[in-house]
Length: 288
Image 1 (tube, rainbow, N blue to C red):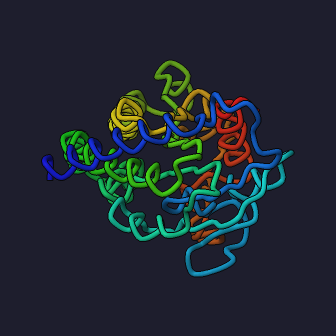
Image 2 (cartoon, rainbow, N blue to C red):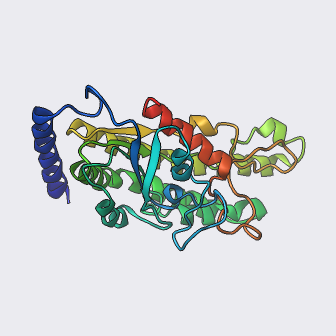
């Protein structure tokens, strides 16, 4: 795998060098297209799951960040190829939607490769008396596996750059799902032992997300070092204060779906407000 990745990145370096010799890059061109020709790739976050009523089997919605970017000035969403459940390998098939006329590409992927949904499932039972040890074990497995995503994801980004050499590639991270637990505030409404357990839960789940985001950032940097016009978009700061509150009775303004019964598709995915935050982070990365 490593040899194939390095070969792909080397080919990208050569290709980008030839491109630079023949034409200016998007960042240095004398003039840029008046409208971004945009394609979205990735998993359920890229599809917009949770942003409204699912429109198809891929859980795309009209409230996801791709749809919201389409409403921004000088943006034209040509295709949203993202699909719920997609892994890095699955997104390879989505690259067929790119071509030399594409000028902006977004990518969100990696959570399914690490089984982050399984981590959430293991940890979701803790507040109701579930096994914190099982949760922590699932988190540790995710943290340990995250570095293995760097090379295949960098190769995917290299493939994006080869198919769309004139495009700015924005590779997004994932938001932290849970609000940190302030034990002092929690102890006013719940036993201290419960508060400590909830605090450990929130800290653990956040660690899994941070490990994934670190791998994504490293992959984007590796691809960029070999000529891809790729940047990492960190959405964690934009979501601060808007995670799911574990402590009943404390103020909460989550930007995630929290109702698995009435909104199973949106459960633990960003809602419309969360995708609006994604949209602003992406626009800022593009300088728009």
